Length: 155
Image 1 (cartoon, rainbow, N blue to C red):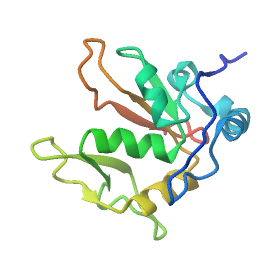
Image 2: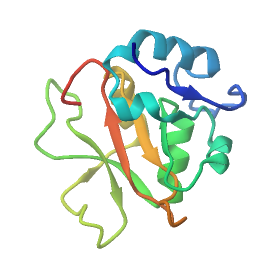
Image 3: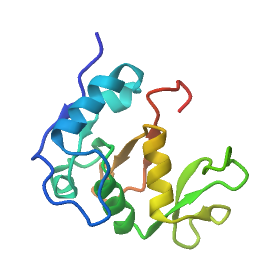
């Protein structure tokens, strides 16, 4: 049997005007029930975050997971990161590999920035999960993230 992902926190309430896709506690539970078998072990063991407010509760170095648009945008904006893609990886008129472009001198010069709507629409279409850290074990801000795809082994 696979480990059940942890989900601690309050149910999602206010959403941005853009919306946050099919989210909230009930939606997260349905998402997990539908995709749990394909999720990586790291994602299965992660604490699931449903709102940006829950990020304050994260332990240093803790692995977090979320499919929530508000959580993803909040995390990226706190790091001055812009939604981006790897040029040349697009296919069938959609974005290719999704990444974030972290400011100058970050090694992300070769990434192409895209707008949030396109990035998040692609994220949803691929049924991705945002796996990330808020802080390192030392307490310093972390830029670690990975996108987990429950439908592919090589996500």
